[in-house]
Image (cartoon, rainbow, N blue to C red):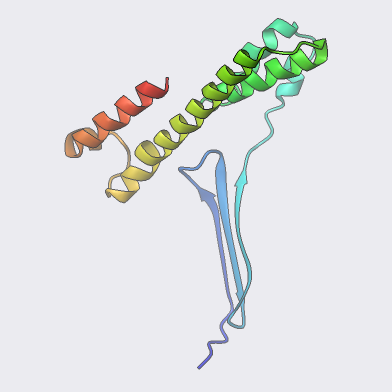
Length: 149
């Protein structure tokens, strides 16, 4: 027996994602028409903030775009300056930058798993109550975060 039901689900504000998220699910006569996850960000116009500033300031300013991926934004700014000036970084510099970016990705995953997902999985509203109820987990998370930094 087929169900010929139509359903529209719109969740317009997801938390615990980097940015804000929306979920859209549309079912028409029992058939999935659309299923989408949108991660949306408001424009922050950092390009305008950089206009007229010294090339030496750009790396410091762009590192403030995001508290989670400051290194990625900073290194992108440095690479843009190097490209504009015709500077080629050494092989060692390229390797060190890649290492830095990989550590930042690891740090982001640790943040997501322990600070954003763990409270939901363990039935609490935030990371703070876990200090008392799951102290080993909290200490592991802090050790891992420290290692990434």
